[in-house]
Length: 381
Image 1 (cartoon, helix red, strand yellow):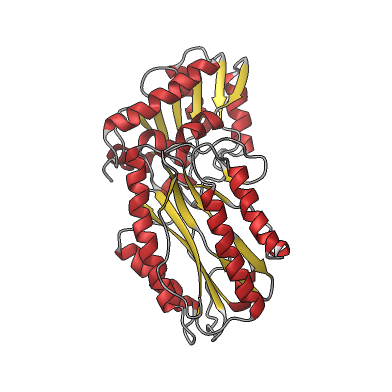
Image 2 (cartoon, rainbow, N blue to C red):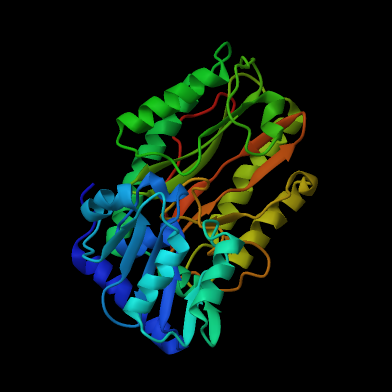
């Protein structure tokens, strides 16, 4: 539970966020998203299911408000000196307002997150009403814009997560043989990733065989894998809360013609999309390239999703940063060095099969680097 980065890394992040607050005229920002609190402070307890927030003025040290029993975790995982705990019998919203007024005596403009899963509408409205600021502005993008481009230290964490994901995928691929249960494959994945150094995951690994792979987000069951069918695997290890996902499909024996076509189309679409992940290109261009390949194979009816999303810090229930950036139509912000995205085309036909091949991709000055992949060769591939 020691801080995962040097103090200067967090000071730099906080300073850039406060500069953005000043430019927007926000006197006090209240951040409640656990990933953003972790980004700004290092605090990352699993106890984020209870109310917590980070109060950030335009200058000076932020103050973390968390459940009283969580204070020790915040002290050990961050460099903060202003940490306040509330008792389970306290009203945390009232405590937030009192703290905020003690930090900034007059809040003319209040900054709140509008898309945080962990700031429910009733609490948002109470905060807005209690501060009685002249105006309330969203701060979601002010934090997200900072999180989108990773520092060298963050990239090193993602590389570690990628190493563990790759090991977990190899274990899962080798375990996915006819006669094994999906649950056996999942057990091999869990055991390997935890043994290799993963922390708790932002989302569980997915293991779906045969026709079950036609359903998105199908987790493991006791179903026995049969010869000649695909087993779709997807997972993301976590290293100091940084994630690196990978999807791969394995099979033993000969696939039916349509399933084999879906596999070839997905692999080609993955390569076309990854080729567009480079400085100057856009997520929209990567999505278009992916869709064009799938259309050329005559399989557009099997593709009903975005082509990828940003990855970095994550807590359950997700391992991605799709709310920050997704590879989809209309996303025209250019790729920049330091961004990391999961390129994940997946073709699914309900009740029949699913094929997915992906990679976590780092945008570099020269182009890109694929961080997650599986080296298990499939029979007949």
